[in-house]
Length: 260
Image (cartoon, rainbow, N blue to C red; front, side, top):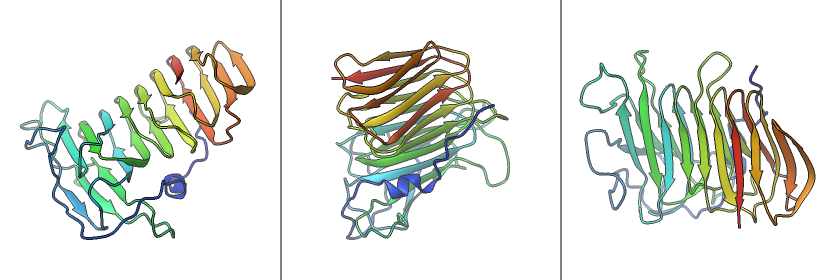
């Protein structure tokens, strides 16, 4: 049975990187780089002020499909694409997807706003949706997904990804970032491989395990403490870090690389 590390939704809010927020919000998605304009672009409604180019915390819920999150410093505003993965839907667009820039809800006046992306049809219809979310900077990310791949590129802050559940299919998880990680990290899937690459300067207390797969780690020259390793598990404190990092899959291999 898939077990969940008790990292609540407020985890990201408590661990956000600070960002000065002020001025007038612009809900129009600018397309400086990255995504080509099309019917599958999602309008971002703004309920919180946002300084163009500043960090956002990302909160994604997708009942089924793939999720891609990319940090692109050339952008000034978040960009979102939602594409139907169901052969019966028209034109490839996913009009049921919605996005909002919301206040952080954290007492700190400089906390980053939250970019909430939901790909559920309020009518209750079942759709598979491919989500592509691009932001100028990232202050943390939370993803709840089923039956698809989750890929995160360049993200930082607290990271919390749960793909699938004991009653629903999961999918692969890939985290590739050059951001130093020293906030809580959770990568958990009901089925599928997990690949993780982050800087060797990160400070985490890692616990990686696969019930039906192998765990391989590349951490040459990295300061590790309290190391424990078997074919299906690996744990260690990286650079004396105490931020919890749980990486687990029920079925699939885990590959962890610390980049120097």
